[in-house]
Image (cartoon, rainbow, N blue to C red; front, side, top):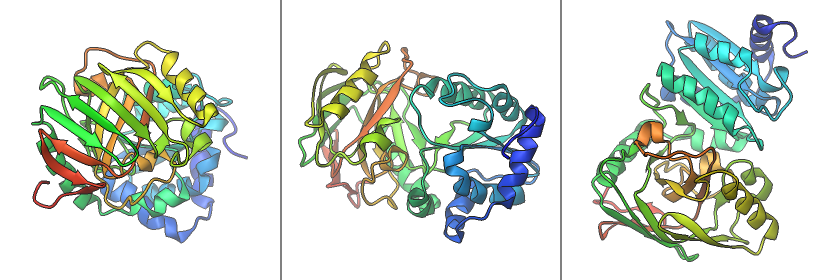
Length: 355
């Protein structure tokens, strides 16, 4: 039985049972990348792993690596603390994070859990912990994006970040109909998240992007890739029924999609919180191990190209002077991108000599 007894008993029984679980050896490379390369866990550190029942095999592979790398290691499983969706941060999870130096979160996205995850990452940010965020992690992602050469991803991310933070205007087009122009304020920071995680900013794993809060975005963004949060597992790859988003002065002014359920789900999501329909993130993916969209935002947003998000602008990192209680990413395919009129990407591939 998973996690019986009080908070301390839950933590230690979960750790023991995770380490006894068998897992596919093919998961080892991605798990080793996460623990050793991306998080750089050391023997004098305390590590905590937060998982859910749907990710137990992946969690077992990560636990095996953490138990070898860290001086001390604990684990919790979400469903053993409270019924899901979790509307707030459980006490056991809060205590585990306060105890730890480094952390990993491997769980599915569920409606209503964003506030819980934001409470978790606020502890991570306050403590300057190295934290790997793996919301929606799957076996396939462990074998694709998590097997990247993250040292090379870091080099590419840094090169793109250096050029992006100097750009006044970025324009993007795709064969599906995306045509957007974004302008930027030098007061708002570009944040590189290459997968090599530092205390400066927790990161998603697999990593590979650089992002900011744009000053203004105008045009049309066609989502022929995937939608974020819990909409991703529900609607998957959007290639056959793309969502067309018209944006004026960073706000959504029109939505079109032949998939009426996806259209309504997205409309409700961006409408139920203040600034939920405002572009809060503009990002360039830099993980070259990601070849195509798979319908899972954790990996899809790292594909070389441009993705944007509506809602919270990560103001605690970018310096934006506004916030939102929601955040939803959208991804398209096959981008052509220009920095101040200079082409840096063609059909989703960075141009040699420009980055």
